[in-house]
Amino acid sequence: MRADLVDRAALIVNDPPILINMVSKRVRQLTQGRPALVERKPGMREADVALMEIIEGKIKIEREEVTEIL
Image (tube, rainbow, N blue to C red; front, side):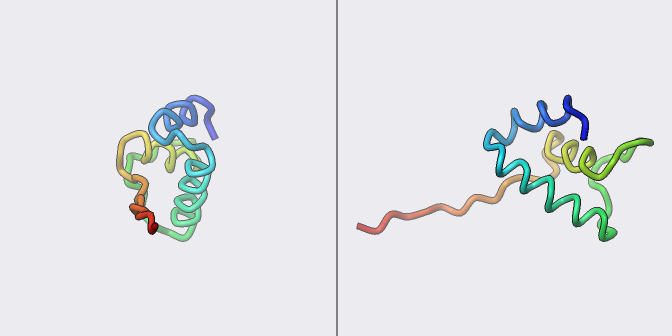
């Protein structure tokens, strides 16, 4: 995993555990045969592809709104 891509993706997903989970889930999908959403350049590993997808806005966090019950 390229450190420069991690740094760029961390600017978009500020919570490290969420970023790790996003990359892990996407790596599993890619290794199972899902197509990459960005151009895959020679030498790019699955984690690099996942990070580029986050950087380019191809995959995003889905957040559920939490309502507080009083």
